[in-house]
Length: 156
Image (cartoon, rainbow, N blue to C red; front, side):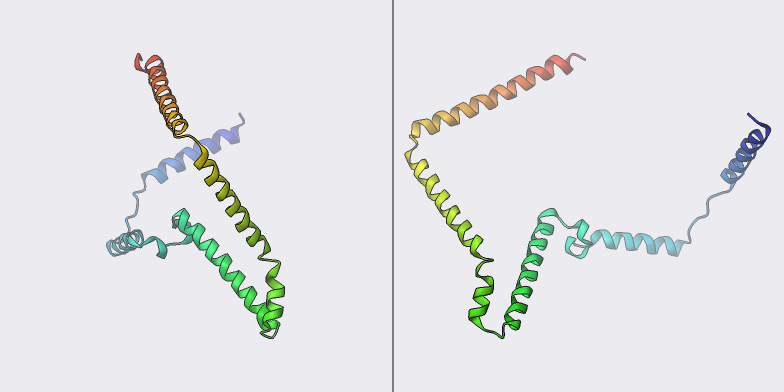
């Protein structure tokens, strides 16, 4: 090491000791009480009065979907106003946008009907056998997990 480095290290240690020896300053009692009261007030707020990041995830998702719907309604209203409140032009402008929704509903209905037909044609004995098999596999998984735990960790 060079001499200037040793002097810098020594100076650093002296400054560090000096700063550590200075007592910490306490906040005024009135300030401390106000800060703690504000913290308690903010903690006591319900979730909908806190910032968006503190909302529960389902509430955030619902809010985003709701806002998307509001934006869509505002756009639909703007097009309707620009079309001069003509219902025919309004339907023509938005018929293609909701076509996918109608086909999606038709697909969901067809899938539901398919599932109903399949469910009606499955023999009851198969359903009970499937449930018994699932229960047996769950029990086996639980038993194997307990055995593995005892083998690996219980002896330690």
